[in-house]
Length: 232
Image (cartoon, rainbow, N blue to C red):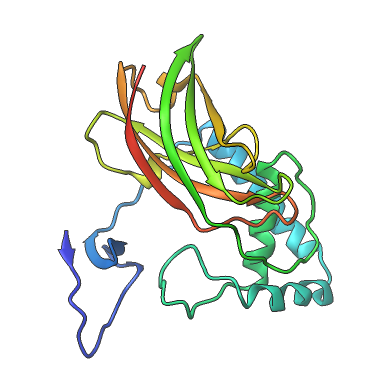
């Protein structure tokens, strides 16, 4: 892991080129050897890919005039990936695909209508504990947010590993929490959790990226990183 030192030629970097990948941690840019994961083609991966392919097909089914309606709404939306300079913006296509995926995650997959992107409420998430029964792991979370009539749902991208292990975004899986951001406590259910990460332990290192999903637009907030140890 080598830190990139900004200079007159390169002030920042992100993404991959050749066998080098630039990534950000703690506001700093680092370089590492590029990793090319093998696509395992699991049931979950195939289901996610199917949703994405349907989203792409849905975008292509729109008239050009309808596609152009998404562009003005995307102009105020910052990307979820670097550069995080508050200058970069996403495209209308990006916003449409994001909304399609959001509704699919909520169990309401359909072709979304273009809508303005509204600022999400500030929110905090804390880990309260976990328990296991009948092969299902239940994670209890404290959620603090200013909701609007149950408009927002919590999506947790979760990774379970051995205590003390670091975060691996590629090992995270999506789980929609019960309740809405109006509820002070929500739960996440992970069926067959020992098989998901091939671990059966009395305690786990839990890493999560917590996101608010807007049930009105399908849009999602920037993520909030939450980590901790849970004992069963």
